[in-house]
Amino acid sequence: MRTLFLSILLASASALAASAADVSLSGKWKIHSNVEGNESDAQCTFTQKDNDLGGSCVTDNGEKPLAGKVEGQKITWSYDSEYDGTPLTVKFSGTLDSAATKLSGSVSVEPFGVDGDFTGVPSK
Image 1 (spheres, rainbow, N blue to C red):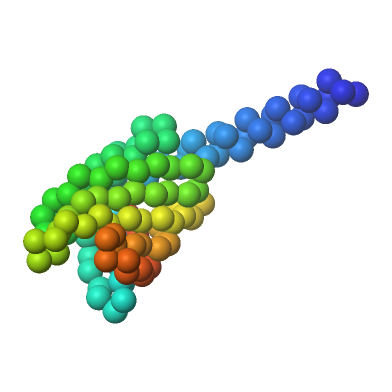
Image 2: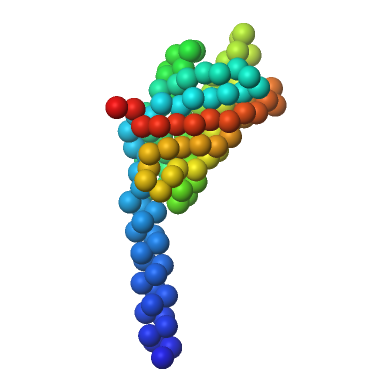
């Protein structure tokens, strides 16, 4: 009985791990942000290897390299930029829907301490 229970438990864990690993962010995404009423759009190209996220985002301030992590459906990434000569870091934290067709979550801009939200969809 114990062996049967362990077999079922391991099979369930393997199925969950496989479904999380099957979802990939790799590719181009349109990201729309709204930070305290200031809306902006970026074109981000994600490259995912295991849980690591790389790539770049093209913003109004040019192309910015990004770094982040993917843990199941949760995603975080950030890139450095500037505003009127002041360096800043834009940080994203959100979730990917199960069909890998939409990202959504929060965005913060440090050191200014302003927050907002974002949505993202794959580019075609």
